[in-house]
Length: 107
Image (cartoon, rainbow, N blue to C red; front, top):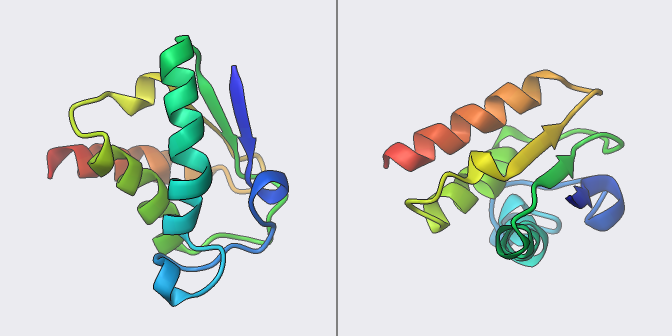
Protein backbone atom coordinates (compact mmCIF):
# COMPACT_ATOMS: atom_id res chain seq x y z
CA UNK A 1 0.00 0.00 0.00
CA UNK A 2 1.25 3.46 -0.92
CA UNK A 3 0.79 6.20 1.66
CA UNK A 4 0.58 9.97 1.86
CA UNK A 5 0.50 11.72 5.22
CA UNK A 6 -0.41 15.25 4.26
CA UNK A 7 1.00 16.88 7.41
CA UNK A 8 4.36 15.13 6.86
CA UNK A 9 4.61 14.91 3.09
CA UNK A 10 3.08 18.26 2.11
CA UNK A 11 2.18 20.70 4.91
CA UNK A 12 0.52 20.72 8.32
CA UNK A 13 -1.05 24.06 7.37
CA UNK A 14 -2.75 23.70 4.00
CA UNK A 15 -4.06 26.52 1.86
CA UNK A 16 -6.94 27.20 -0.49
CA UNK A 17 -7.96 25.78 -3.88
CA UNK A 18 -5.52 27.08 -6.51
CA UNK A 19 -1.78 27.72 -6.67
CA UNK A 20 -2.61 31.35 -7.45
CA UNK A 21 -4.40 31.54 -4.07
CA UNK A 22 -1.14 31.03 -2.17
CA UNK A 23 1.10 28.34 -0.75
CA UNK A 24 0.12 24.73 -0.10
CA UNK A 25 -3.04 24.77 -2.20
CA UNK A 26 -5.18 21.80 -3.11
CA UNK A 27 -4.08 22.16 -6.72
CA UNK A 28 -0.40 22.06 -5.72
CA UNK A 29 -0.99 19.01 -3.51
CA UNK A 30 -2.80 17.22 -6.34
CA UNK A 31 -0.11 17.98 -8.92
CA UNK A 32 2.99 17.40 -6.79
CA UNK A 33 1.93 14.66 -4.36
CA UNK A 34 -1.48 13.06 -4.92
CA UNK A 35 -1.40 12.40 -8.69
CA UNK A 36 2.14 10.91 -8.75
CA UNK A 37 1.38 8.62 -5.78
CA UNK A 38 -1.97 7.66 -7.29
CA UNK A 39 -0.26 6.70 -10.56
CA UNK A 40 2.36 4.67 -8.63
CA UNK A 41 -0.39 2.81 -6.79
CA UNK A 42 -2.38 2.26 -9.98
CA UNK A 43 0.64 0.84 -11.80
CA UNK A 44 1.58 -1.38 -8.85
CA UNK A 45 -2.00 -2.60 -8.37
CA UNK A 46 -1.98 -1.27 -4.80
CA UNK A 47 -4.18 0.97 -2.72
CA UNK A 48 -3.25 4.54 -1.83
CA UNK A 49 -3.87 5.63 1.75
CA UNK A 50 -4.17 9.39 2.26
CA UNK A 51 -3.90 10.34 5.93
CA UNK A 52 -5.44 13.72 6.73
CA UNK A 53 -4.59 13.62 10.44
CA UNK A 54 -2.03 15.92 12.02
CA UNK A 55 -2.77 19.05 10.00
CA UNK A 56 -4.28 22.18 11.51
CA UNK A 57 -7.32 21.81 9.29
CA UNK A 58 -8.45 21.92 5.70
CA UNK A 59 -10.42 24.36 3.65
CA UNK A 60 -13.29 22.76 1.75
CA UNK A 61 -11.78 24.21 -1.42
CA UNK A 62 -8.45 22.46 -0.76
CA UNK A 63 -10.16 19.09 -0.34
CA UNK A 64 -12.44 19.49 -3.35
CA UNK A 65 -9.65 20.64 -5.66
CA UNK A 66 -7.28 17.89 -4.58
CA UNK A 67 -9.65 14.92 -4.68
CA UNK A 68 -12.40 16.17 -6.99
CA UNK A 69 -9.65 17.49 -9.25
CA UNK A 70 -7.99 14.07 -9.31
CA UNK A 71 -11.30 12.50 -10.35
CA UNK A 72 -11.80 15.11 -13.08
CA UNK A 73 -8.25 14.60 -14.32
CA UNK A 74 -8.52 10.80 -14.34
CA UNK A 75 -11.98 10.80 -15.94
CA UNK A 76 -13.33 7.31 -16.48
CA UNK A 77 -11.26 5.72 -13.72
CA UNK A 78 -12.85 4.59 -10.48
CA UNK A 79 -10.26 6.19 -8.22
CA UNK A 80 -12.23 5.10 -5.15
CA UNK A 81 -11.10 1.53 -5.87
CA UNK A 82 -7.55 2.63 -5.10
CA UNK A 83 -7.99 5.60 -2.77
CA UNK A 84 -8.35 5.09 0.99
CA UNK A 85 -8.84 8.02 3.35
CA UNK A 86 -7.80 8.15 7.00
CA UNK A 87 -9.22 11.03 9.02
CA UNK A 88 -9.54 10.22 12.71
CA UNK A 89 -9.22 13.91 13.65
CA UNK A 90 -12.16 14.90 11.42
CA UNK A 91 -14.12 11.77 10.35
CA UNK A 92 -16.56 13.73 8.17
CA UNK A 93 -13.79 14.53 5.67
CA UNK A 94 -13.79 10.93 4.44
CA UNK A 95 -17.46 11.14 3.43
CA UNK A 96 -16.94 14.58 1.90
CA UNK A 97 -14.02 13.34 -0.20
CA UNK A 98 -16.08 10.41 -1.48
CA UNK A 99 -18.89 12.84 -2.32
CA UNK A 100 -16.55 15.21 -4.18
CA UNK A 101 -15.04 12.35 -6.18
CA UNK A 102 -18.46 11.00 -7.15
CA UNK A 103 -19.70 14.48 -8.11
CA UNK A 104 -16.59 15.10 -10.21
CA UNK A 105 -17.12 11.81 -12.03
CA UNK A 106 -20.59 12.98 -13.12
CA UNK A 107 -19.22 16.13 -14.81
